[in-house]
Length: 205
Length: 211
Image (cartoon, rainbow over all chains, first blue to last red; front, side, top):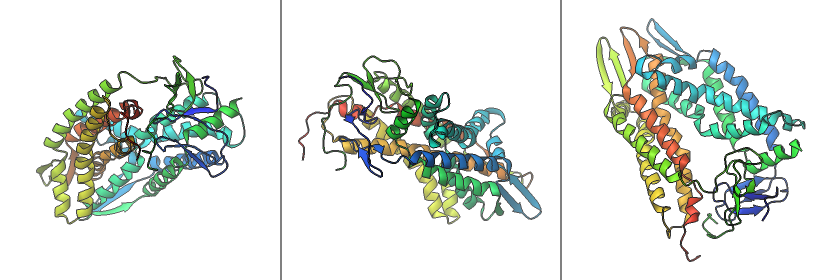
C-alpha cells in the first residue's frame, strides 16, 4: 500500500481509514475505537484563531493588573499572578516557582501564540507563515502542560480557606483569567487533528 | 457502539506503513519523521513500557514524602503551625467547607493513588495477549490522561495562599517542602501516562467473541 494523502490512521488505535471531504457539520469516527477523526467544519479554523487571539489579549491584563486583594483591619495585601509565581522563588523552592510560572503563564501564552501563528493566515485564506507546521505540532505538545484552568479552581479553593480570615476582593486580572479559561476550553472543542492538518497541507500547496 | 464493537481492523502497521500520532498522516515504513508535520515516527516504540515504569516509580517515590512532610506552614503571632496534605483537608472540613474539602481530597489523594493503580494495571495487562475488551481499557486510559493534571490544584492553592497572606507579625503562610515533592510527583505521573502507547491496547488482543 502506498501512503497517499487521503489515507489516515487513528492516532489512538492505528486503524487505517480512507476519508474524503466531509459534509458540513458531520463528524468521522474511528471504526474501532470511536475517536473523532475529522469534522466537516471549515469555519472551525477561523474560530480557533479568534478564540486564541482573544485569550492572548486578555493574558496581558492578567499579568499586569492586580489579581486578588486581601484586607484585614488596617492591613492590605495585593497579589498579582506574577506574585503568585514568585512565592516559591527563594531557596529550595525556586524550581517550583519556575514550574508554576510555566504552567499558568508561559506555556498557555506560548501555546496560544503558536496556534495563532500557524492558523491565522489560513483563516483569511492566505498561504501559511514559515514554520507553521512546527508551530502547530508544538501547540499540541504543550496542551496538557498549560494549566490555567486548574489554577482558577485553585483560586476558588484559596478563597474558601481565607474567607473567615480576611476580606477578599477580586481585581480585573481575576476576571480576565476566568474568561481565558472559558475561551480556551471552547477553542479546544473545535480541534480535530486531521481536519486542521489537512487544511494546513492544502494551503501550502 | 462504545468503541468495543470491532477488535480487528487493518492498522497502519499491518499495511506496512507507519502512522503519525500528531497529524494522522500515513507514512512509508521506516520513515524517520512525518512528511506533513515533522513529528518523530515510530510504528511502536519498543521503549514505551520502560518509560512508563520509570516515570511511574519516580512519581511514587515523590508522592510518599509529599504526604509526610508539611505542605503549608502558617505562622500566627509567632506560633508556627505545619499542615500536611491531609491536615489541610481536615482544616477545610473543620471550617464547614465539606464540598471544597472533598475537591482537595479528591485531587490530592484519590486521583494520584487511582492513577498509580490504573497505569500499573494497564501496563501489566497489555504486556501479553489479553482477553479484555479494548473499549473500557481505552476509556480508563483517556480518563487517567485527562484527570492527571488536575492534581496540581493543591500546589496552586499553596502558591496563592503564600502570595496573599503576608501580614508580617500577624499572619504569614509559607510553602512547605511537600509542595515541591507533590508537584514533581504529578509531573512524573503525567509523563508516565504520556509514555503509554494507546495502540498497545489493541496490539496483543486475543480473540474475543463479538457480542
